[in-house]
Length: 414
Image (cartoon, rainbow, N blue to C red):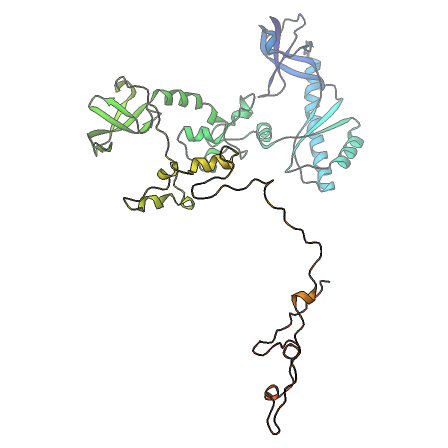
């Protein structure tokens, strides 16, 4: 066990442990301590106490001294200088046209460093701003970007409940909050109703979440059959705040399992329910998907086997799945089909080495012998007047064969 003292540097800041170094420090005393940032002025909120070594990070920094009146005067002077630095920094931000919002300025106790806290939507290039501030204040400058929750903690305000913000008045550290906490408490999921002035989920959603979970475990689930003073019933809903359930009684149970329930809804307290066995939730049915066409099986004829039921005989669906996954029956043997030859027994395909010539695809047409025509008669080829295209003159073959047309030439791509 190690003796420590708890020190806080802001009103609702985090508590840090320090080594009292033999000083008799009482709760509420102002102290001067040494930190990683330098010498700081803080207030002891936890008196001398012993804690386990696993709860602290060694080595502990020591308390230098209990603050004197002179130290308190220096602290008040630093706070006045921080207000002047805030005005000067704001003017420099406007001069450099930076999209950032200055929240707070803080001096260390020994004035060795000035810390500027700001918020911004993204990353900000403030190198030129740091140079200007260093030339004005002649000390080390640190710009630290914070989030919207930290901004609300520093600025303070009034929450939707009409009271000051928890984070700015007494909440030391932020706890993780999720939308599931609002669902478990049956709250409205409207963002405007469950969000704080920082725009994030309210921290108070975490306060009662553990109690809601504990009460929910002791109440029966929705759809469970339970014993009531008036007989068996089915749970419609559970009310966490009153620790009660709403039940409809079972009038009759049909052979196929369907229940006939009463129209009246009765509310019972948790202590009015009898000893009910632990309820096991039924397996959820697979949602119907139109793209799978599972509904076609309902319209089959009575004597026609179901696609899924008849898949077990022959090369069934399971066998197909096994083959697709590299299982058995890789040879491809099926009923009514000859087995495929092995790859080694198949004849090799002859490879084409030469491309067929254009003359093979379009063989030259045979020239027809000139026929003798009686004088005074007209040749049959000269009946139609007008010039003939190349497709008609060059593509003619034997008698009764239609002339071939040339394929249009493909244009070369530029």
